[in-house]
Image: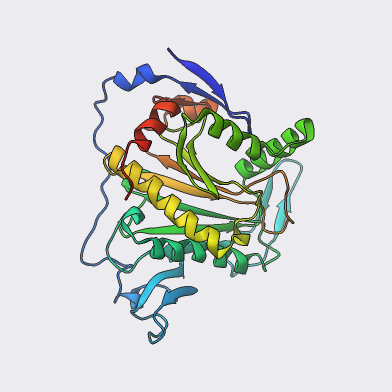
Length: 333
């Protein structure tokens, strides 16, 4: 039987419709990634990329040469650029901003591997440190308001290159979904005198059915009102609004949790395409007691179609309780 569920933070409705999972699907012409010997991100081909902004490499290796584990590069085809000034244009109806921002690529390993669940914990730690360090650097630019880290894994998730990589897009505005989360969390705290993320963590631990991985510092769970099948969040247990303030100890634990969740998704769902996104507080704001940074992971098992685009309400074919149970049943790496 179908059920309507409401997200407690942004008050977005989701339709849980498990019966739809049995409907016939005839469209199979999904795009495929091209993987070749000409991998542009492979070690040894550094001369074909833009000059690195940050790299974790062996002490005796030269910049923009072999010997690295993780590299951060300006995107060759940027959506926004730092080589311009912020200019606003408005009239009685329309508003525009010049295309100022930052668009970077985080190359996550030197070998031709597509899924970071197969990388070492140490390698994943360096990826997470790169995220932190780049946000710290971009925070110094007063023109930038927010930085979003995102990963597209698989052609159906929007990736055009097989080699494991993620991206950072910094904008002169705060994205609307982040604004909705900030407002929803602030309103909940004002009405209840409590942090909504604390209450969500407490409820998920007490219920237990949607928990995927539980560690001293993090909780990974399939969200109550999941928009996407097997949607999983990783949330820190302690109040932390800005990811860039994460400690080295927490990064080590987060790397283990992220690897565990992605490995479980890979095994349970036969290596699915997926996206993940880091939601964190605006760059130029101080600590926000009502907000908490977190990772959101979206396996791309079904297509977003007309109803979702037209209404903003999603239809999910697998209950999060069932999704979490299946993920828990997968053995650790």
